[in-house]
Image 1: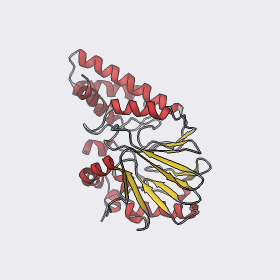
Image 2: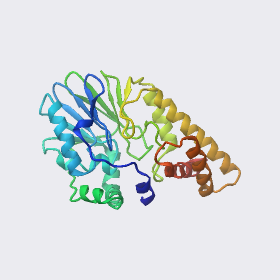
Image 3: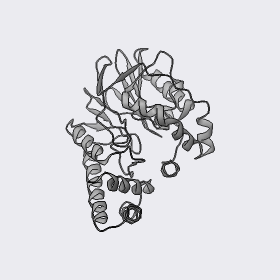
Image 4: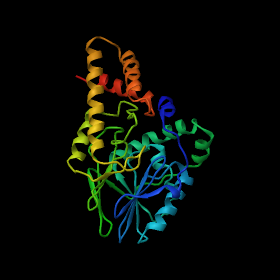
Length: 290
């Protein structure tokens, strides 16, 4: 976890000034992370919370300005701290919904993740004081559809990729995909531990590409991208996988292969943050190859 902490992107406070409109019903606060808000006539859905209560308050202020109804749903793309720990800023009436696997992973691992984030900066330590969670109101296994009134949000779980419980959201009428960390632009992906799955990641990319989204709202980096980014991420992973398997075939250790491929990819993508994540991706290839 400390390696993950060192590799994370900078963590500015969220600001309502960074609110952008994506489509007829979808908005995003660009920051750490990008927080999506889907507004219907009957209800509103917020996707992710920001890091700690202070950021959660910012999200709630933005939601209240946009909402057309008092009914509020909250879901999270995965259990990591910047996506979940602003939960206590949401009212008790907010309906928390997430997939069962993510909730189990959250129960098990969010404490250690918060501890790692607290060690990163004084700001994080302050933001993550007295974090409180409550049990979700709704758990689903594979899919849940929310009729928000004039717009439908499809929440779905396919399998492990970045984490064991990655959740994606597709806003059907607007053709907007909210993919968590699965599709991002100009950022080295993170596969932080053995629960991450390259095979799963590639399978999810295939499934979301079949949706032909018009817009994609990633968790980190640029807040609005198009569907071509799915292919970019796939090409990146297939090339990394091929290179790692070639080095493994040559008898190179996972550690040395990680160093070699990290250097190669840093040279190829000098402006991408999180290069230290490459070694973890290589290790997953070594672990998960037959």
